[in-house]
Length: 141
Image (cartoon, rainbow, N blue to C red; front, side, top):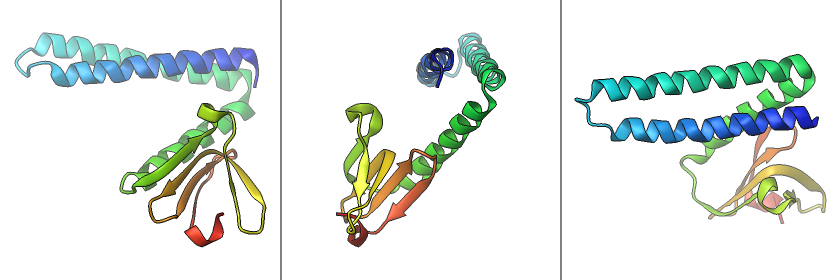
């Protein structure tokens, strides 16, 4: 991934974090304060537009990298949906440790972005290729 694309992704992450703060602010505004609510809603809409423009910039620079990013984002959303009702005893991410993998009973490793072990021993994994997979406890060491 080029330095330029990494820079754009950092901008997107910053804007997304700021947007989440504005959403929290929006929910804390008293319902009778319509003007302030509209200002925050406009700010959030502007931030969404900025993110879309930055994504299109990535697409112009490198379509394959853009497709990969979109694939991983979709898989992350699938991972979140699968995970919302699960209780994890251990979660490991590539970002936190610089290394993330699970080892199957036959000794093979699967590199991942996120590996989460449930209390019952089952695993939910987000792979480097942008796939969300689930494995029963008996398959993973």
